Image (cartoon, rainbow over all chains, first blue to last red; front, side, top):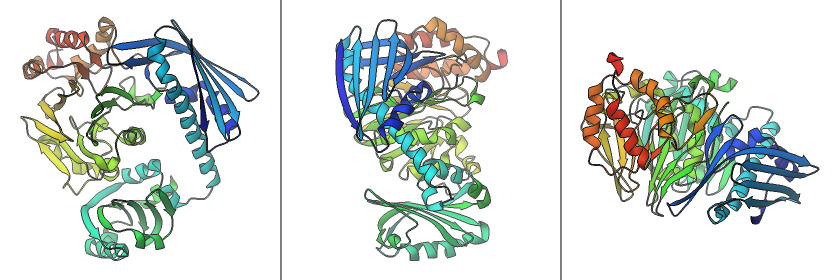
Amino acid sequence: MRATNVLVFTKSAPDRIIDYLSNIDNVLPILPYTTGRSRDRVRLEFRRFKVFRFVDNYEIESIKRDQTLLLLFKGSRSNIKFIFRPIESAIKVTVEYDGPRGWVVGRYLSEIANALVYEADKAVYSAKVRAVKTTTDLSSNLAKISWVSKLLMKSIMIKNENRVISKGGLLDYIESLISEEKVFNKYPGLYISGDGINSKMRLLFLNGELKGIYVVIGDKEYFGNEEVLREVGGLMRIRVYGIIRPELILQS
Amino acid sequence: MSLRVHKPYILYDNNKHLFVWLGLDEAEAEKGILTNQYLVVDQGEGLLIDPGGYYVFERILENTSKFVDPVKVKALFFSHQDPDVVGSLNLLLDMFPEAIVYVSALWVRFLPHLGVLDTSRLREIPDEGGEITIGKSKLRIIPAHFLHSPGNFHLYDPIAKILFTGDLGAAVFPSDEWYLFVEDFEKHKKYMEAFHHRYLPCRKAIDKWLEMIKDLDIQVIAPQHGAIMEKENVAKFIEWLRSLDKIGLDH
């Protein structure tokens, strides 16, 4: 028997995360080392030193009592037990492995526990953020890859260039870009995205007006803040996309 | 059974060079033809192999970011022109701003139909193949024309000794089953047969490919659909291909 304890601090309320993990359908996609699935079983495969491996097929049972969750992985040759308990703003996970090749599997247990809590925390947190933003906020949408995916599905890449932009000169550059390409004659919407050494920006123009601004400088995100565009500069990789029917994007 | 595996699996890692399988999403309409995407990282630079359509993009970006900064992804390799390979081109060019796209010379002229009018980051692969340098490693582009596309390439990683074979080796799983690694080749070949008989045009294309790869040291065959074959299953797969008859027009 091998056992380990992990304490994971979370952004979301620990009891919400434990609720999320109590649904096996939520657990399966975020389970590391998955190499197989059948109707009611998941196959986990662990390797060490390229030579040693351990594979087992597990049926997962979820038992929740009060605030404690037990996820029991019952395999044909081994069992893994995860016990999740909330402790203030963290979750304590106790993992027990009972089976052969514990020296192969053992080193992965805390990683799996961490990954489960981390991914569940991310899912619960983003659901909460979605619920708070009841109105359409284009700047916030620009931060979401899923939304940008939909945007680019309905767009045409019209320019791709690397350009050194002086600090404070980004808006002048964009203005010249727009007039030079006469894009608003062709496209009612425009998406401009740029990456610099320490910064990233995504801008959305609709009918000539700047409607969405998302900027990342270092680790900090800015939403809808036109002033912060003056801080973006240096060597930028710029892509410009024409949006053919912006109303389709605004509906999504 | 709707299938999502959003955790990547490392197929090779020597601390400087990585070869990673990037997870799985199944759309109901795919009917068991699940797509595999792969990432190669060498010395901090990345290459994405057949990164796929919009449907899988979020997972690809998230899992890639776990191993390499998206700005350090230097290349996108497209084995051919199918939508499950090139579908998210616009998005890939945006989210991997330094990446150059490598695709058959036959298909570059069709890519503007995906909404890419600026083709400055597209590179044509000539029929005879070539190399892509990532970090300090050189990956070999192996011609695999008509398997199944007329302009078709595979990618060989000489460090990991992994051969990415695109649609060659594709398998269609039953609705209640999926596995990443082939364990029982006899069972698995049944899942590959229908695809190879229908999608490949002729026996000659396979024979040419067998000649092309005969000197490669292949430890792993990683297809775009289906399961990965390792060790003795590599030889079994090659023998199985050698034995296939009634392909394509002769089926």
